[in-house]
Image (tube, rainbow, N blue to C red; front, side, top):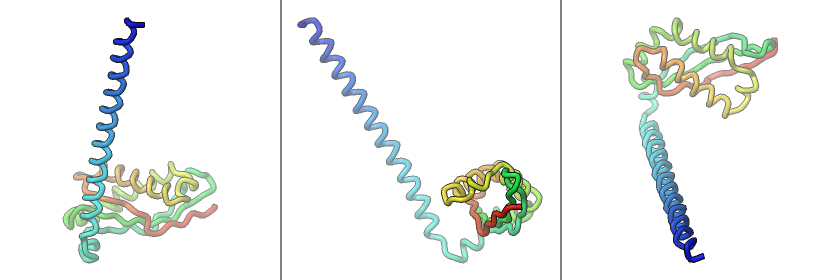
Length: 153
């Protein structure tokens, strides 16, 4: 028993040290995410209505099939870009570059995925990433539905 006591103390100390390090590391990660999210939200709140209009674009009335063979969708999107010049560039290519990306993304999407706010948000985030990959300079900040109608064929 005397020979096991130092080993037990060492093991207990090692486990405690590991738990403390993991706890400190996790606290640091959570703090950084919250600060970044809060700063981004504060930046968006500072924009006036005129500034939002200057950096926003719309793409209306896209009609296509969904992944469900018996469902179609009619949808309109609004896009927020980083600045006014990005909006001007986006306006030039939205019907020849952005619209096909949206149609392809919708073709892989089922109606159930778009039936909830969470599903719509995930689709918008996915779409923002796909569009930014296709743009010469990724300046698209967000994508959102401005009108959605899903109907049976």
